[in-house]
Length: 263
Ligand code: ADP
Image: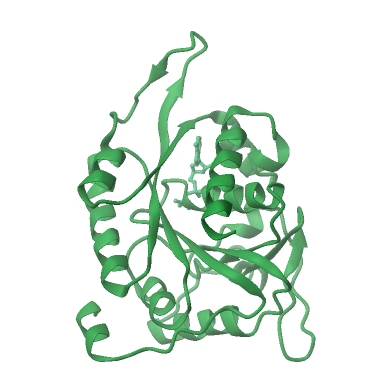
């Protein structure tokens, strides 16, 4: 699939209504990609940016649950109007479908859904759109990288070797497609005990080593914390619900760093 991209030149359209589009990707499901994307969006907003969050995981949308959004977006006759929550403009296929409906879609249908989300949504005056990609190296990543002007991608991983094998594939894919990798995040990196000690449950340093191996930036570690899961479950991500938590502070620092890259 990637080979074909060399022969064909694609027109990359910017998403109308935003200055910069940043994707959050992961090689595997369950590493905390959607949690990361939503908290990063909120942290950028707290750094004074206008932010949109596009849940591009057509097969497994998370945004309705993570932001506790149960309403359907309205249309202005031409475009879908994003749903505003926590001062973030949000769009997800999950707003349009029943929570339990499986999305049994073929590749071309995914491509056309992505076109709708990038060209037919009335995003307004945004500094950033954070795109929560599905896991893996499939149609969505390919369509975005070929047809949408992407300003960067952040790859989220956990430290297990099994996850990292796929991360390497992901890095190579984005490199070949010419999408700039802003860096790698080591999520659920360690557990901070009540004794103040770091417990490296899944091993230590493997995400950073992978970043070094491919000459990519290592953007940092996010520890495991039960509060992250709890906040996700009640639809108020940790940065919004517990802004003074250690993890929220990590997100705010990261958002500051990302803002500085572009502004
Ligand atoms: P993905 O988008 O990669 O499939 P999710 O964002 O849905 O992953 O996260 C998977 C699960 O892991 C969720 O229950 C989420 O709350 C939890 N999780 C994510 N990051 C952390 C963390 N740093 N500490 C604890 N739990 C986390």
